[in-house]
Amino acid sequence: MKPFLILQLRSLDGAADSEFEAFLKYGRLKASDVHQVRMEKESIADLDPEKYAGIIVGGGPSNVSDPVKDKPDFQQRFEKELDVLYQTIFEQDIPYLGVCYGLGSVVKYAGGRVSKERYSEEVGYTTVQLTEQGKQDPLLTGLPGAFKAFCGHKEACQYVPAGGELLAGSEACPVQMVRFGKNIYATQFHVELDADGIAGRIRYYKHHGYFEPEEADALIAKTKDVIAEVPQEILRRFVAHYRK
Image (cartoon, rainbow, N blue to C red):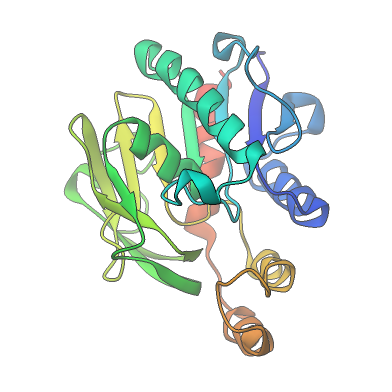
């Protein structure tokens, strides 16, 4: 079996480690099933996407819509490298699942508008609703038409670009899940998080501008009993479908 490629961009080791473990847990993957790359530390310029069963790009505090002058050098580097990778992914319709930043970066590559002008969401959870197209998608068939998902982002996709299919949205953020071609998926919500996972994220990023630091405990209390299993099922289905 080809391995899955997991690309991360979290410079905080604890946050990156917990994200990686969550992808393994809810994707039902073993460490030996994947190739992990921390893009903020390592170049992906020499990676061949055809060598992988699928590619997963996670989230992080980087924003694709920030002015170039405000982006650290490592972000400027991996965004250029991602664009080269996306070119091959789109040309060959290689299985891809982008999460949060993974949605923003692939939508921007595809010609969509990603910005902070509208549709940001506070850290917490939201109710996602499948579109009619989403209900018919192979990864989503049979799932509830509405489900809870963990979220939190400063920027958002303002519209789905040509060639994209809107699979799910929410009241606060109309573009929650998209597909390009047959195999290129991306979600604004987090497919890898559970209540413990988002509590950890809140602690790691309490000083990163998502919320006032003194609000952290209240946000953790608000999410501690939330069950968001459908997003995890989407991750599991993606892995199961493309590992064959």
